Amino acid sequence: MTAPSPQKWFSLPDLILILGLVLAGILLSAWVFFPDGTAAAYVEVRQNGNVIMTLPLDKDTEQTVKGNNGSINTFEVKDHSVAMTTADCGDRTCINTGRISQTGESIVCLPHRLVLQIIPERSTDDALDALVH
Image (cartoon, rainbow, N blue to C red):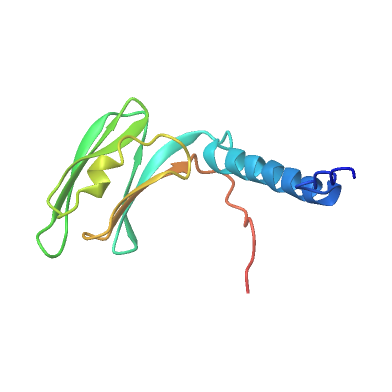
């Protein structure tokens, strides 16, 4: 008697599917983690969903934002980046976020409903980009 042949773990279609998923994962990771090349120019500060200030990243400054409930957040613009330096919220996740400098990155202080987001340089063209109904 001959010993039975070992069974293959994966068939060719299984390997193709696995390789396709791995490749899709790598491409998605690259798209998410690498900036799009747009020059970051401003930090937009929103409180309760409203823009309260927009500051250029090329001028170092420190700003304090006071909330309606007496909350206080201080952030620093330095070396083309932004960091939350002080916050009197409970978890201080906004401080632990660290510095941000790429377009689309943000620091959020959820208890104080405060968002700092890096935005690209605005176009000087006043024409409409899109019309949505």
